[in-house]
Length: 422
Image 1 (cartoon, rainbow, N blue to C red):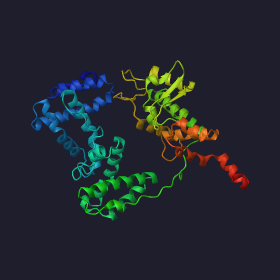
Image 2 (cartoon, rainbow, N blue to C red):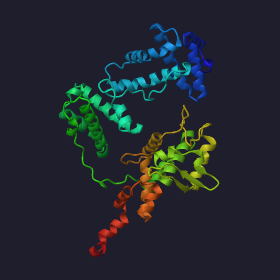
Image 3 (cartoon, rainbow, N blue to C red):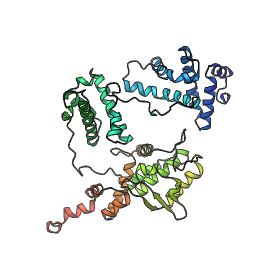
Image 4 (cartoon, rainbow, N blue to C red):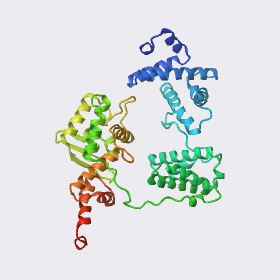
């Protein structure tokens, strides 16, 4: 298998001469069988050869001893590639691809190797000083993993900020430092995100006070910005702009066929990214021309007529570009490993095409097309209860925000007689 990728016999001989050469060749075979592009082989194999040489020089003589040398090798790799002086989060990000490559190899050659680490390879922030905080979030507070990831992201930013200002210890925290951090973070966040950040900080500081790390209840020093209900506007775009987004998709490529079908589902039915990523093959009823959307946010499922243009786009993708798989998911990643697409990928692809089309909108993403769809229903004078039920809003308040951009109704109020309004 190595000869398939490496032309020079000397290169193949050097790989096989490595004491884990057989394992590396098995790994290359696994990459090929799982559809990885040749560039992945060219990048990963030298990393694994270096890992084998490092482990051998450090005293390893058997494959089952290799896991003990993973982290020392990652540290050595970072030092050799100029990661000295970087913040901890940047070092972790630089280490992620190297760590994941070695983990894949170990999982392949060591049957009982526990390859259950997080794919992003980042350690929990404040892991040494507060080792059980994230267990507390999962076990005692029952937070979803997606919410825990938000905590990790925001607290990692706090950890970096404290290192930059020269106060790495949580014991030395002060209200002034907290205010400085929130102010700095607020320069790049909207009001909703700042509120989320403040909520995370309050929970973290309250936990620190309860376990005795903080002598003062600093959670009281965190003041969230006020955000009034219905104060914002839906971030919708015009139908002409939706067409520009769809036109921006190169439907000749494999990825383009998939993305075009995804965008049509978002724009035609106002689906959420999670609902699109959760679609399965059996959710498309070709005989009755129906689309079944399960597990909506409101706790119910919905059945829609399958619009012809959507059906044609789905058929085009399924016939030519969906990878062969025993899985029943509708959409898969375009690159190896060919796993089902995630909701985050759906949102990112929508954001990508909105930018390619030159459309500027706050927080561009899949919800932009959802807002546009709902706005179209409002402009068609459908009852708000009907709209909310159709798009799966959990509460009437989620639909009421669109009343503020019902231009015809607002114009009638502005131009009408006061008595008629009352």
